[in-house]
Image 1 (spheres, rainbow, N blue to C red):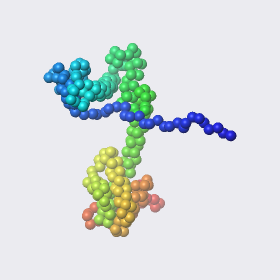
Image 2 (cartoon, rainbow, N blue to C red):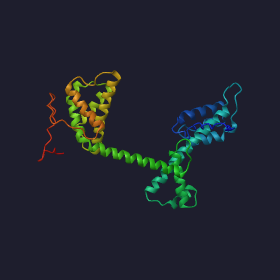
Image 3 (cartoon, helix red, strand yellow):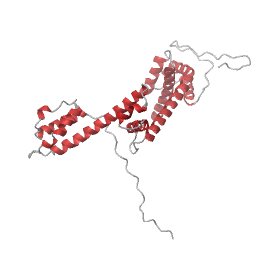
Image 4 (cartoon, rainbow, N blue to C red):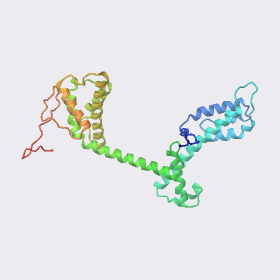
Length: 298
């Protein structure tokens, strides 16, 4: 007989709260802290610093915290709330200081400053210590809840960022390479726009295509145009599915949209050999030039 374990099933740990304050409305907190010092009878209240002088505000609040008194007719814990606000502002300053110190290190390194010149500034005794402290500062800026503040966390984040950048650059190259076909398809869609059922998003993407089809003079713009054609196709089909209705109302529009759909989900759709000129005056796609032997020229 198998004995049941006396240990209870391990429960997953609850997700830790955010590890950084981030951007907060310090002016509102300082104003509340000033009100508490007035309510608590701060002897130096008239010298309470301005809201933008955050370090001076904290210095003043800490200096005179022991002189604050709890009013008898107040339900607010003046001393306690003031202490909590001071702690929050100190945390905010610490985060800003870490980020500022890291930026200073990065600027110095970019200017060619060796690691051993940072030892005194970072309170370490070796260039390895300066490097490791800089990595910990970096980890503090990029880590997620539950991550430790270690150089490995910073390295993993940089590796992920580099991988994302490589993927984005690869996508840019692919989309730019597909641009000539995307432009041909864009002209077809514009020629037969009246036969395509559009919602607001499809109209938006078609407007972008119409405005920029003849103004794509750099790789980023060409890649972006290709993405707009794909977004238009998805918007049209999504609208048709939601309304349970056809996406086109004419045979010419159906063919143009079918070609655009094939382009969106395949590498090289078959471009029609001949498309009649539209009433709007847009030039039609010419029949592909054929070489000797019957092969179509690319």
